[in-house]
Image: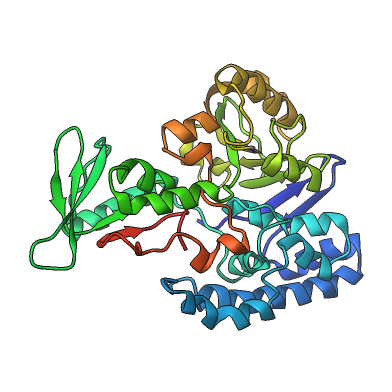
Length: 392
């Protein structure tokens, strides 16, 4: 289902910006802020397109297994000033402070600070403009079930509620490969030729392969790296609908750079916040009962390695602060919430086995991207492959 607009951006002073691939409407909104930024936006879009062609179409499916793989693309990366962060890059094209926020926040979608994340990630803007923004009917769960059916049609066996306790590696007889002995509650030392791990990359090396000496160098390396922010997520349903709300809404708080500094480098949860509000029932009403609405709101917060917060006691207070703030967009919200569920950094750490409760794995800085990230094929352990947010 197409999502229109792609995003609605709201500021505390009541300013509003609907971001979409309707070029005329987009440029009218830009011109209303600063006419000179219309041409600046056009140049930014062209820049984003060229970065997309090189960085996404050319490199997204290319494994960086050797340093020379990185050297091959270095000229292109330098041409686009990959060393320059997203916000600084956007600021070269646009002068209006709010437009700079509007076209730099995308780095947060991959867990990066716009003031630190490589300008390569400006490609997200053209990616959306090129292909649009869509939502699967029935929610993300419907997409998951479609993939499950495909996997099973191909002959795959799916075992749910079977967490892996450990994986031991033994030499495979008569070859240079290895046998991976996987242990769960139901099976002990079940042998596989290959393991493809979509678990948190630190958990993969520190816990699943914790007994394997060849995993220790990567574990130590990961613990020295910078990790992305965590999130506080509040799911809630209301007994009324809100017609004037977009599927995707970003609500900017009073600070931008200062807030991001506190989220990524501070040792406590900031008093202020910027929020992302997801209202999927605006696109697919079947996700809530008739006359009701389903939402989640997320607030970026420091990961557990930065801020030692007692989330078990603080979570209800923080949730109420978010709901109170949202009442500027959703009138009388707290009177109409009929169900809610909180997901804190502690849940990212316990339920998702995310290192330090980080929501996006290793931060996507230039020095932690491409070859500098954990490789898709492990360098030391034969038959171990890494997928997910922690790798290229």
